[in-house]
Length: 494
Image (cartoon, rainbow, N blue to C red; front, side, top):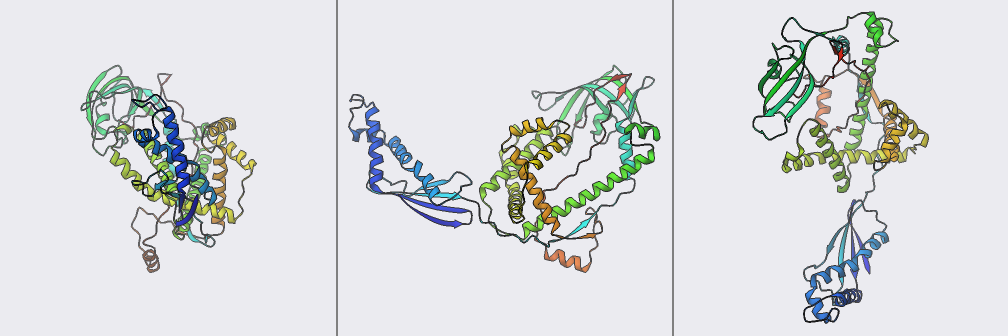
């Protein structure tokens, strides 16, 4: 067997394998004899048909098995001989496949196309310049947060002397059928809590529940607009049957020191609560600013380093993004079985650009990890698992059990920590200046220098993968009507 390696590109190699005629003949005769010994050919006893007759009758089968005999081990040996590490299954191309004869009159020539990891250039990651901008507190923002907390701990006071009105909350058992799709699975929900006048709920839906009382039943139809937030309901007409179980008005806890103390034993007064929330707002604003700095640095790193990315890696990441997108659609009520294939293909094609940026960024950060001698210890992995257990309010053992069922397992945690350390090194060696907050939702008046800079970078790409800071809030207590606990369910879809 002769092999010859050709570099098609930094990520693609081609191995030409040539198998000598005598070896081809030997394999062809071996397979032919095997079929002749086992074949049942009309007019001949089993195993006694002439080889030429067997070769004619089982031509395709013998050809296929002979090629399998010739190529199976040789492809792997050729890849090993040239010390290649394929990222995906090699693509095989048989030369002169249509006219190739396997009787030993000519050699068999195979082209093996292999995709490999390219040599990643040493990144210039030191001294990258970015501006850190902290979002200032907005007017009324603190009061809005306090109001949200009060809403979480609000009580429902039964209304018995009047019918429901805007601002009330009704609890209903609901059933809905689609007018245009009568055979579709109906909408069903028991103990559904609906705030009348809630801007997040379709107005025509809540309007039909105004003026109702306890134990009443009402049937009504709602036509949802095409742009409705829930894809499962957008553009649909639904007929609802609602049984009113109770009507209540919302009573917010009094805004005083006693309420603040009920939230947390560390709060002695309402002012303590306001001070802590203010600290939280500032902390979140700084964390968001730091996240934008990291994203901007990674974006610059990607923009400054162009090199070929293996298609196999882009495909894997694009599929991951598509799967995440599909899960999001499913959670929003979209029936994925009804999604057109063209839409899926378009979404996949659009995600390939983001996938390429993701992969390029990951490869560059891995190179930085090598240059910075980044290491992750077993203790660091254990600490991260404990942190995850605390965040998800579970035990480290349950986190480990979950990881054991995932591909990569705890190694994924180590890789994540390694990437995190690479980003820290990138930030540590960057030139970061503080600047005023720019509200990107408002038109900006640019200085001459900013206009020139924008012009120079008009073709720059943006790295869109953002890190989100999360804040834990006290669990909201279940609301009560008539002294009994009621299940609190979201009515956002309606």
